[in-house]
Image (cartoon, rainbow, N blue to C red; front, side, top):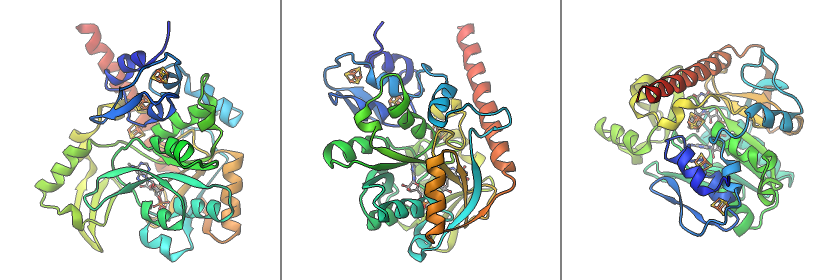
Length: 353
Ligand SMILES: Cc1cc2nc3c(=O)[nH]c(=O)nc-3n(C[C@H](O)[C@H](O)[C@H](O)COP(=O)(O)OP(=O)(O)OC[C@H]3O[C@@H](n4cnc5c(N)ncnc54)[C@H](O)[C@@H]3O)c2cc1C
Ligand code: SF4
Ligand code: SF4
Ligand code: SF4
């Protein structure tokens, strides 16, 4: 049997399992897949090469720990509830320009700045937004771009399409990718899956995953803000902190609601997501278990550790070891449990039909 785009469409997209990461779109060697109404669709001729299918993290073709072993050289221990790791820290940028625009401690932006300054990367993939909070994938080429993409946008865009843009159209050779856990899972497949697009995978030098508990349907969420009389053009920051969703206009907090109020807008594909911390990233960054103006850092790979330590030693970041990651552990367990529960319930509903 050939696992082509039709298989991907039937098994993932039609079943609402697609996380819209963009991995299939970017990896198709004949550029036959395009985005139509926020979904990957076949617009050209499919040559049945199977590459798109093998990059998708939602086909169930891989045991995630098979990829984990390939990347980190070992599988997680039983007590590593947030995946394989080497060290954990809290860290904060030293650069004022970064601290002015970042989400938490600015660790993501500082690590990328260090890599650009040292010539270790010539591009990074991130997410930019416009004044109406519409977000889109973006290829970062310099410090100005880096500052423009800093900060979290609580929405999903097909970030990995920017990997193709960086490689095929901008001819970049060394790329860092920042992404949500689902996006990091797919981009890791670019290197380690059984049929990988090596011309993309070989260019990826470092992956930084940001923590993510669940993500929302963008249009519905923006409508919700309108109903709350929030003028999106005036919003400077959105944040998730201690179970609350907060919206800021400069220093003024203009919305502070329980995150559960946004539950109705949770994307179907997120309900079966088991990964809170981007378990396949070289470095994972979030905020829980640190003060709100610091970043929580999980270092997983030897290369990730080298980059982090070098960035600290060169003064890009201030860092302190973190002893406990109790909330990270708890949220990782809860997310996995919720996903398994949802999968079980959907299987039962299907069996009853
Ligand atoms: C959708 C989403 C949900 C999150 N949920 C949690 C959570 O529940 N708990 C928690 O502790 N942390 C969460 N985080 C992570 C947190 O918001 C910060 O991104 C993280 O702490 C890094 O902060 P920083 O100051 O180091 O990042 P910065 O230096 O500000 O850099 C942020 C980087 O994230 C990238 N980015 C922004 N939005 C997106 C997006 N939608 N998709 C992919 N990349 C993006 C930017 O391109 C930029 O490179 C979430 C992040 C996102 C994007
Ligand atoms: S990657 Fe291969 S299988 Fe997928 S759509 Fe393109 S040609 Fe078809
Ligand atoms: S690779 Fe990503 S965008 Fe493509 S079908 Fe799979 S989840 Fe969706
Ligand atoms: S909850 Fe999972 S699938 Fe949804 S956006 Fe976050 S990482 Fe991706």
